[in-house]
Image (cartoon, rainbow, N blue to C red; front, side):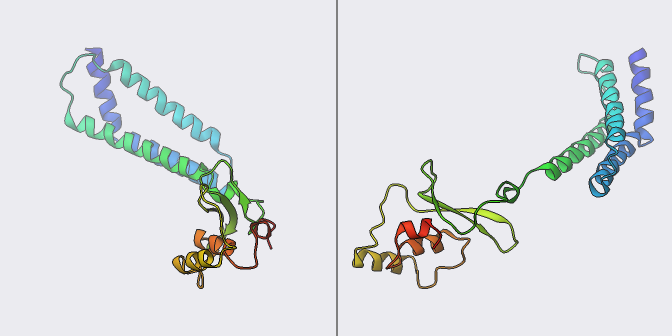
Length: 191
């Protein structure tokens, strides 16, 4: 009967919104540390350790076989889990390195060959938001036949190269490769 008494004690604690307060406290601590750089990580770790101990105690005290548990108890547990899972997702998203962070310091507007694919060429450019992005362009299995006037004319008409769009699109860079009087070497040198 100790198991049921422990479960009843836990139910009273959960009923007092302890799990809800714990999740709110951890969320607040992590947000505060991230925003103000207060480095209160040790406090968050202590709270998470407390939560982990509570979870371990619950796991030990739950019966092995399927049995009746009050529905309200499961609802409280589900809410606490959702809050902690939401907090983990939030923290993970804050720590995710963006593509722009990886591309900082790259040479802009200078195409280069990409022998490993996925396309024949790539170039780093700044988008409207100010982030540095990589634009891939060119079919790696085809050669550029820009020196043949009919082919150049057809390519440029097919891709509407008279208005190629922004530098952040592959069409802009492909059209540059098909301009008359330019070579791929000129483009690779950033001219």
